[in-house]
Amino acid sequence: MSEQTGGQRAVPYYCPFCASEDLWPAGQTHGQWECRTCARAFALRFVGLVGVS
Image (cartoon, rainbow, N blue to C red; front, top):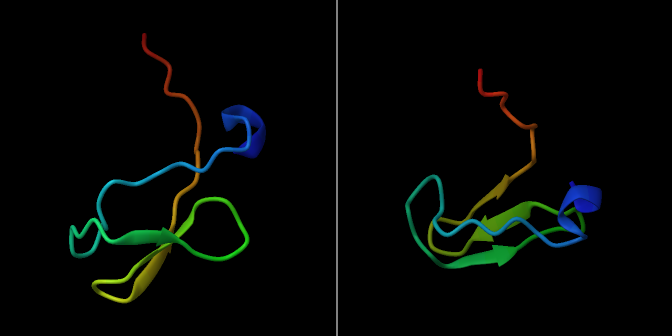
């Protein structure tokens, strides 16, 4: 993912579990986030591009 985004993190706007906006980067790997409201951690990753036919 880092080679496609220029080393920037993909930023989520809401926690996928509780919808809180209190998110912080977690861990050393790009795409890992923690929600300080519900105390859950999750990861985002780029899967690929979808072809439109």
